Image (cartoon, rainbow, N blue to C red; front, side, top):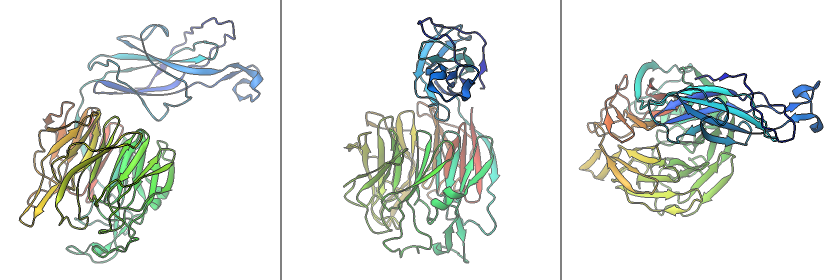
Length: 500
């Protein structure tokens, strides 16, 4: 909801200057389940007339911004800075323009909250406020629409692959990379006919699609399903690893993996970083860091360490993260831990046994070993409300015992593991997203090797609820959110769910 300004001014007499700043601007709210996310722009310093705010002489400053104060009141606008509950005081200018502040302090669903944001000078002078309102509620994903993904000329898809094999979110955009291009007449299991598309597709909450040519190019040279790793951290989207183009399936050179990693910030600015080459691993965030874990330098060469990059681009390595290859694993986060659970020791085709081992890292990158989940791989991890949730997957124990999984298991912030009601149908190669206290899992490949359109909605208590299915059955799809809209994309089509 857009904010609005009020012309009243409150000042505090500290013996200094008494010229208030302009009110903070662009106050906006996103009401959610038991919380409200807010963004705003802090006011500029004021300079003495006649130079105004264009003056650059520090001696001409009449009022200097010190911090902004966010006040919340139920039912009506705060009268002044002391009327209501103090939510936060931010002293980093424009910290919450794109990265939202989450108000979770005793927020009650169904209560209309009125917010006021004030700019305060170094002399304690308080500006006029800007107001906004929000009505948090126990909202759910609602199916919005099915749409066709329009590809550039010459680019097509193959039923065995996702159109995009990785998705992640910034503050306001869903970003997808890994579109495959057919360069020959591929049939059956002829995987070698596919090369990558050198763009990233970007969706906003209105459904508008754009392309990031430089991001796609930097994330190019990788084209196999389940090989690009991705995660979202503090409003930044991270994409890492994958295969070089032209790598033949089942016959890969040791240099067939890439360490190229892309960091896309909330303004859609793209940066690249080089990490350890790997594909088929997992990714998850902790603090301001993205951890790329497991996988290998090709289908058969093991990768024992893990790579870490934070939102500034600083790189670290976790040595001896694993003792065997963790292929086709999944990652998810609690509030204070990145967790990786479930994998196969044979990245090529899963002929090795499925495993349920789990590894967690805290913000100091200390390794912890929580309880195992049910043995599986080709599953999905979703971070939700302080929980790391793992759903679906594939269990393999012998040539006569290989089945998809219905299991939904999660870790809380104490790394205690628990189970929730299973998926409606057992599936692998599914996709999942999180918004508020809800999670949505959809698509995948069932026990009969047929694709499914089934969608599974879980609320804040991890109770499974009914939601409309995808518009068509698909596997190897991927998903990401753009504010309150969730996009599921794969195999020539997309579906949008709105969270309301």
